[in-house]
Image 1 (cartoon, rainbow over the protein chains, first blue to last red):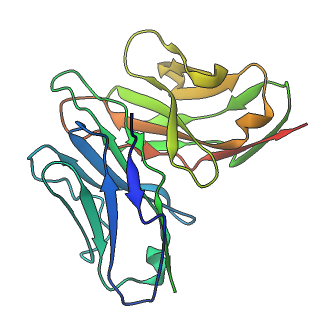
Image 2 (image 1 turned 30 degrees about the vertical axis):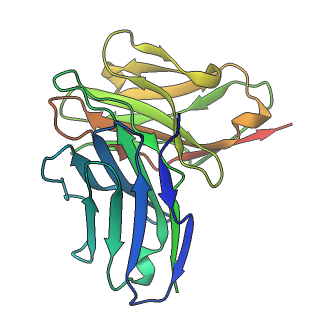
Amino acid sequence: GAGVSQSPSNKVTEKGKDVELRCDPISGHTALYWYRQSLGQGLEFLIYFQGNSAPDKSGLPSDRFSAERTGGSVSTLTIQRTQQEDSAVYLCASSLMYPGQGKATQYFGPGTRLTVL
Amino acid sequence: AQSVTQLGSHVSVSEGALVLLRCNYSSSVPPYLFWYVQYPNQGLQLLLKYTTGATLVKGINGFEAEFKKSETSFHLTKPSAHMSDAAEYFCAVSDGFGDAGNMLTFGGGTRLMVKP
């Protein structure tokens, strides 16, 4: 079946502009995660959505970062007033959570490479 | 707080040689442990994971890893390297308790190079 898809694959923007990154999880997966992969910081957790629960935003680096998940499916990560340090690959992952049965494998998308000039 | 340390940011082996990628973790609770592989310009692909039960875990492409609680280690091995194994490998840990989010904490990654 189809895996996690992300768009765009590459995004170049100017400092100060806003950007939106999209993630389409695997159909039926209830959990969705955003991570950031950068040279200086490695792979970092950003935000987590599970069903209709409030998202866990504990990994967002600043209030310029936000994300939403509509209809329990597609998610959009928005970065306002981009800075050069936001340049990174943004990875989305989804998984099928089993309540009370521990953790499921996360399946990753190919990522969006963001370059802020 | 959880953390993961991967010893060696770059590892080079000859084709046919043993592959050993090291991973040590710290966690205040019994962890779930993962190895992911990332090929150039691609996302992460799960190689194997340890949750509970048998401590020797077999994964795809001939890789395996052993969970050693006493050593807080989860090293990745493969008996014979192939050229196609050249990639970056990430060890990750998550809190195995409850139904809270399964956020992964990653190590810094190890780039494996395979020489002909």
